[in-house]
Length: 326
Image 1 (tube, rainbow, N blue to C red):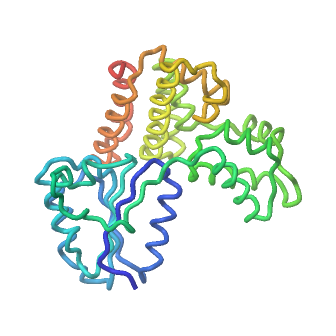
Image 2: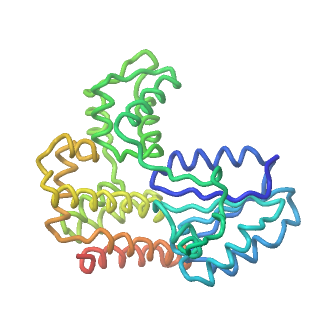
């Protein structure tokens, strides 16, 4: 059984990252599992927890999320000290949606004679968003594994309608399977029927309201989501994806590719409704970096204060987003 290892998992492809974590979890026998959110729990507390072995389990799985928020030299030094000499009973996974951390947590990597990378090469990976061909293959494989089938035009429409990370694709593909019997081959027409008749509020419909600059409707959608027991963390995750896409859309516009369908499709903007939302967000003047920073800040605030202030803080988040992130 693999023990005493440290992994670094980066990048925005949440679904594949979760699968990689699941595979590591399988290597352990009923581990004691703990997750920390960098920025919410001080680095010194995380380091102290790592150094102390478990009293009740033979193995531990510790996950540090949002690791890009660990930036101070004294904080990174504490974690580096542990990473270079991990506990035998502990599997540590450091994660972030960014493509890299500050020299992967080690400022010394910039020096002329850097120390060896703190994470072994085999234990670090960047999970990039799948390109279009891989997304198509992923969807086809998913339906085949379930004993179902979907037409090429159905796959094309699915990619146009939903965010293209594999965790969200898995959720929507599972929803489609539930609508039709095993012998039915799902088509683009079926998707249109399902999505138009079962349209629910989501982080993506909330982004559409935000993109239009409509504070009243944004708050209304937010309250609908919270009333349906959607967690703030799930809402923040969906909006963060949208804000990263907004940055990509801005780059396409600046490069004069806003009418280039091939470029738009490759970047995930094939659907006219999606382009309309991002164009509206640009017209409103939203700054993607400021939106992402505010989202991370309120994610941590809500985790710190618990359920008591959840609704109030979410309202403040939306109000600030629509007024100060432009």
